[in-house]
Image (cartoon, rainbow, N blue to C red; front, top):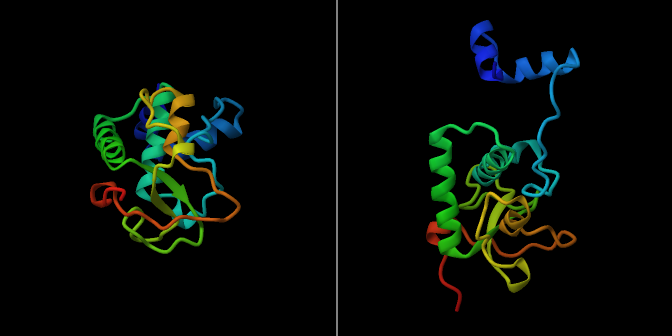
Length: 154
């Protein structure tokens, strides 16, 4: 039985099922998405669209069941990132911007040569590391907005 099925049967959340199983020593290890989310993300930024999409990608890579709706959202988001030639960046101090319009934090930046190419196979955890740029000692680039609206490089 999946966590979702158990949650539905007992009228609780999937998170509550995980916590109960973890406390009983019955839960498997939770997957890590550190290769996609290498930052310590503030709670206020945890549900920003880029963070959600990176976690969905991580779930797919881990072989977890991902709802078709989320797969479709992920595919469109990755297509937009590829077309705009951007990477996901994170800075706790970044104000709201098109990538994270409510709380800020996440933003898109033009892909640099050192970022590597857009991954040919985003389901490969090693290749997918090129979707994000690790922080450079607090230094950030100017946010580039939603991948749909990024202007071409001059």
